Image 1: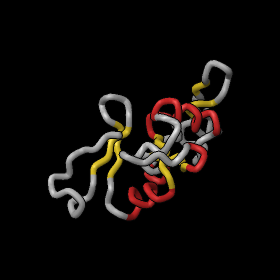
Image 2 (image 1 turned 90 degrees about the vertical axis):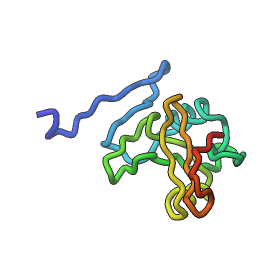
Image 3 (image 1 turned 90 degrees about the horizontal axis):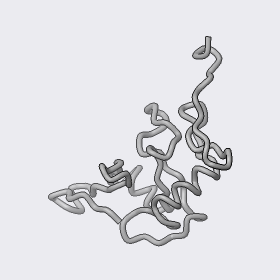
Length: 118
């Protein structure tokens, strides 16, 4: 019955703000964006980029269309340029074992494709 009603668990922050809303909503909330900024710095998380958080896009590491949840473990703040790198220029982003996103360049940028971290 809960599945048919599209009921999902929600994780709340200390002040009751929504931090994890699963698959029901595609877009990250403002409290989630603030939590991403706290986790990864108050700017674009891509290595070497310092575009401020307010000009960044909350990106799903595993695409929402591919059943990636809208939660902190699947999100990263990227500026418009680096969001394009991830979607159209062959860069890969994944969540590292250390709990922060890390990046793999395409082979044409780095033949060894060494993982890069900010």
